[in-house]
Image 1 (spheres, rainbow, N blue to C red):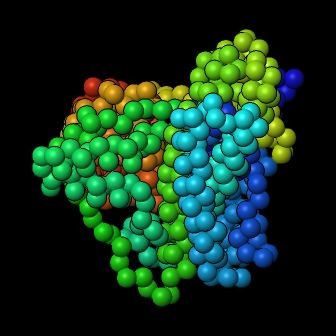
Image 2 (cartoon, rainbow, N blue to C red):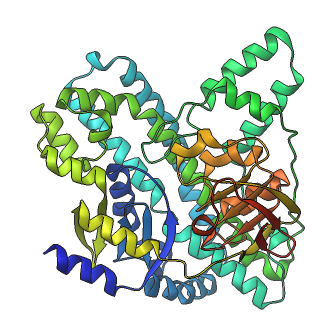
Image 3 (cartoon, helix red, strand yellow):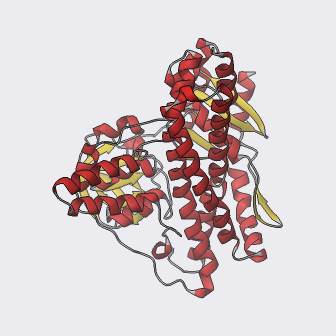
Length: 452
């Protein structure tokens, strides 16, 4: 059976789009969301039937994605304002997140005051809201790519317009850091305390929790905050494409922020449920949602310790033709190697797209996950598969940024331009070719990274 599943996975033409470390539980919840149909207009719906996590690789059916371009054409012909309707739908989730975060944090402090049914209910609410947020990723990346390409085809440079439709929480975090920089004495200390509490979630992702500390703030304060506004007046002829581009950019980052805050807030509840079940915190997050609920009700783990160990070694989880599949252990590790790919021969130069111009020479630091964050030093060149909001603190310290993934509307591209940090994106192979300690020249005027 496993061999048949592995064969089916290899037969599908995948867009190996995203690399993210994290636990099985949160990744499967996201997959459940991303196979849901998304309605753009009355006559247009997007849907994936094939979507898969192979350990850290998130794979999307490339042939399905290719059909989205025609569907976007149809949606814009039916209603040029449909991205604004999507934004209105999505924005309601922010208020729901605030309410649920408050409930989750209150349960985390007072678990003994809640019944078993109440615990299960709020855990279900967490899953449902995470799904409601994450389903918009199906739109966000294809929409930004579509709008970028349409603008380029019309001889319009998309870069000046590649900004978010609305502000993020990370924008208010930057303002908070500026306020701390200007304060002194007791006022400064109070602002730091408030900042740490408000943005405690900022280094969280996929149920992986890293503490946000005064040291992080001190490093942020040591670097001058640079902000640039690349947005220009929108020409009316291309307003629908530009607004679509900016809506896609907003969705890509905002849904990550909301999810980070949920993962941070659910942490104490997860620890409590794990303790009730009698397993370690990390093992709890390797349980599927329903397995976690049923084990909590039984007050013992209904998944074998061998299976959990296999999932910790590696997992493949997702949907093939709408049917859920799960593999764990050696077969997952083997598939992961298959999607990692190999680099043939010596490579001294890699090429990508320019996200923010500039030329920098410096020392490489490869950051593959949050577990590597502690290694990053001020002024190093950040090399990563991609960046997400939890990378912000590293990006502020970096002299340059290089990523495997991303287009002009990716998180790395947007934030690098805001910070004024030279950035080359979409290299595909940066994390495979570049190693910690290498000296490189990042020529972000030409989109080239050279090993010195």
